[in-house]
Amino acid sequence: MLKILLTVLFVLAAAPDLHAEKRIGVIMTGDIPYYGAIHESFVAELKRRFAGIEKIEIILQRPFPNPISWSNAARKLIAFDVDLIVTYGSPATQAVLHERSNIPLVYAGLYEPAHAAVKEKNVTGCGFKIPLSSILRYLKRFKTLNTIGIVFSSTEEDSVRQYKTMQLLCSQQKIKTEKIDIRSRTDLEKVKTINADAVFMTGSSIVHLWLDEIITSLDEKHIPVADIFPDASKAGVLMTLYQPTYSQGEMAAEIASQILLGKKPDDVTPHIMRDTELVLNLLEAKHLGIVIPVQLLIEATRVIE
Amino acid sequence: MRSVSLPLVKSFLRSFFASLLICLISSATLPVIASGQTTELLIGIEPEHNIFDQMRRYRYLAEYLSDQLDVKVKLTIMSRYGEVIKRFKTLKLDGAFLTPYTTTLGIKELNLEPIVNPVNLKGEATSQGFIFVRRDSGIRSFVDMEGSNIVFVDPATMEGYLFPMAFLQQHGVKDINSFFNRYYFSGSHESAILGVLDGRAAIGSAKSTVYMNMVNSDPSIGQELEIIAQSPKVPEVTLCIKSEIDLELREKLRNILLQMDKTADGLKVLKQFKAKRFVGSRKEDFAIIEKMAQTALGVLSVHGR
Image (cartoon, rainbow over all chains, first blue to last red; front, side):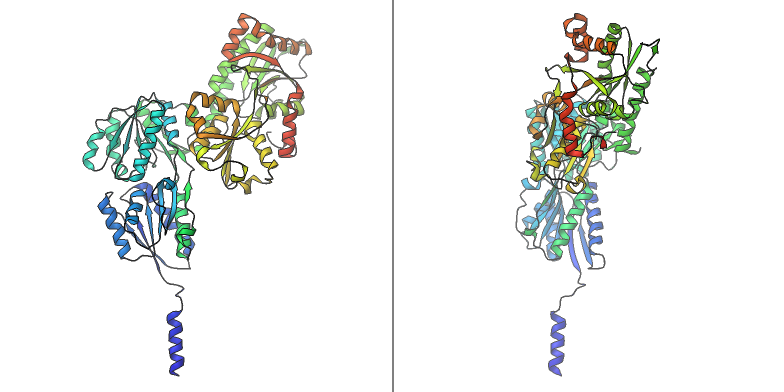
């Protein structure tokens, strides 16, 4: 009798719990609408995939965009011993990689992941590419460009890469560049001294945290702005060429679900999204006194008027 | 503040400007035949990307022909490719400047007579279809195309639809819906090129003359795109006249156009029309397109009506 009881207890203890809870730690920098939109579609897709199969708990960390906060967020999730960490954007991804944990990592919202230092074991994900040359091409059709201001953050690896790419494109086309490095709030003063025909915003979280203030300063000087993150407030940015967030969120959820169901991250090929949407802001164009040619207007995926 | 979706804006703008031009330029659309003598000719035009510039160019030519023929030549612009064939009879057109595919349809279905082809400022009277990709897309040939997005120009274009369809058919593609992730029609050759440059599609098709014009005005485009297939060369634009028009008038029209580069007045108008001269056209020039259509679509008249 005792033998039977012990056998039953052993079997129960050893059997996999089919309804065990999985925990996903997510690092979403600050209140950046771009990352918020990726997260929204990530959660929706994950719920759809695991509905009735397994309970998923998401622990969301929203660090302020600075190295210490990103690092703290990564350490907290590792301490929670989550089953998977999901990061949006380069700095959060780099912060987790820096901790050298064994927890699988899925990244999203990463610019050109093939050029980012993310090729490590246990790491996969999806990123995007925006042809920055197209931004330059459109800006040139809005007005004559002698100098372009590039707003970036040297604390964010992908923002630096975008800065360098845009700088190279400009030099090839004999357009001068003016770099504006935003590392902290005090750097916003630099925006007031920009003397450029147009400004390009790199996909930096710290830059987008203070986007409204930056736009206000540039608006006073009637400088048009182009961005690669969608302008949630629909005011101030003249043109936006961006990769739709829902596809990255859904892809991140697909990758996450594969890993949660037992696939090794090494066996999941990273994805790069190249499709883009072009938004032109006619309100801002009117404010800046820029006439957007009809031939250009019809290229837009969306027109704000 | 509100957002307007792209298809609505595109459709509205195209239709609006085309309608506006039709109203402004062709106040009377009926050919006038008094006592058996033609006193007016109504000529249709297929739309280019910039219809304002196009109408300006064609107006110079219409005025010149009116003087030389002693017959009033009026113009009407269509809102899209292929419409000219569909509406040739209802609009009571006497002729039209047609692109290669619609010329082929016009000869076959409406018994139109090809009269002349303009020779552009580079000395070319022909164009060809290009299939192109972004160099960084990873697509090098047909084998890499499956599952990606493609942009066509219009179902009634040889360069922007018929040729890529024939190309795909020759490589064994039976159904583009299942072969590609997505396909769409841009409405113009320039839009198809911009669509690939911006990442809205990975693969595009468009006509060589527009492609080369864009590359010449912005060399960075040539560095970013790669042509992976080319169609045979065919006459780019052909003036076709309906066979019911008096033979004597047709011959007079052909001779005036062929002799334009030999007179000072003619040369002046050719310059305004952005052409070097006109050359004679023959029905046999379009046999290759009919063959291509049969390969791609089975029956020539399935599309473009």
